[in-house]
Amino acid sequence: MKRLRQLRLLGLLLSIVLAGFCVLISPQLVQAENMESNSYRIQFGNFNMGSGQRTGGGYTVSDTLGGTAVGPYGQYGSSGYFIGSGFQYVYQIDYFSFSISKLSVELGELFSGSFKTDSHTLTITTNGASGYNVYAFANHPLRLADGSATIPDTTCDGGTCDETTAQVWTDPNQAGFGFNVSGDDVAADFISSNYFRQFANNEAAESMQSIMGSNNVALNRSATVTYKASMPGNQGSGDYQTSVVFVAVPGY
Image (cartoon, rainbow, N blue to C red; front, side, top):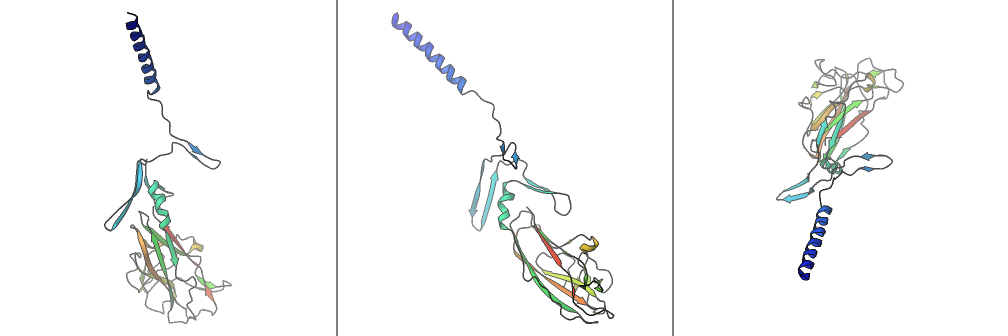
């Protein structure tokens, strides 16, 4: 009788211990981690469930699983913002490069009724999922350093080309200054080497224009920019110059 009572007491004690254990592992409220310093605060930071690289015959794929609201938001050049949200966007930034074969373009001595040209090559590599764009503009038209004379931007043979649309320019008596682009991923209006545009004029608040671009990743994609000028018959001699700016934008 005494032994049976001890067993009952032991069983009651075991039940109490198990009940206590069950209370300890009952579901608890889980909160996302907040990360902060003196310069930033990330609230509800995301911890992905998996990531890495997968390789096979002729391909390499990187992946991130479990991201929240990933993807591109907005678009450069057509909206006031662009956000590349997600770990894959950060991962690909390392693969962007842009180079210009030479930084000084010399047209030499200009004469009325004849063309002078010079060129250089743009080369771009980007692993961005949304490709890239290269924009161009000039600070001002070709002019003398003292501002006393200017070579006008070309209007091409038919007087119809401008900073947005290239047209045929083969008549040197149609004086002016313009450019052509040939090679990979060039703007569609550069149909051949005879099609020229004006540079967008920053001094006149004209918007820079895309001259080269693609929606795909790019590996050593290159294009040749050819500058061409013809002197008006009554133009004064001197050193005419301007600065041309290229803006290369990767799409992530």
